[in-house]
Image (cartoon, rainbow, N blue to C red):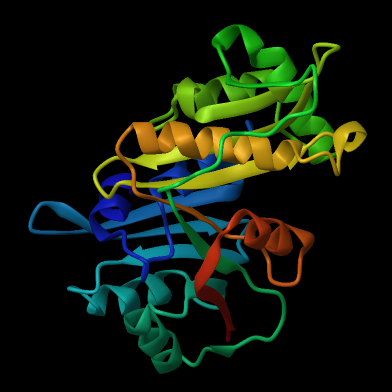
Length: 262
């Protein structure tokens, strides 16, 4: 799945290799809820489907083999499907199968050039840095506080850290004077396409409105640039406070998601 995603990545594609790693490993015990299927052409993956809970369907289809979209939709009919507005081959297939656009919330895909990034600006006593394996407990604790209630555990985050393309040097935190992690930004690098994805990002409730989330993001983005990437991407929901946050960091929209149902 990740090989296909990496091969197809562009600003017209819905998926990044980091999406698959994070969503597959952030929780444990969800395997009974999921079904994965692959379609191959000429010895390589040309389409994949990821069904969740019998209701939602994630999919990716190589535009060079648009007929496979029909096979995916026949295999998993009547699911809710989210795609990118630039994936015209999937829009056509969904419409052929009787799907229509569903109104509601959507994600805005945003990008940031990695040139001329500012250094992280922090209040006295706070430091921004990448994590080590010894930070596992505190790294999980801040995620749980930001996304309470959260199913992320030390076991599941250890699985995340073991998954490609996770790197500790792209997992950034801001450490408070009392030793707590106050903010974080996890960055995933697709080195082939030189693009990194921010997923996820958060600030501890006790430390919000101090610029710490921005410091974590800029620290991770500078580390990303040092590894040869030239852009970072992120997908906040439209009219969510996160969208404004990323706009203030200099991210600019380039695409949006579309939701389809039948």
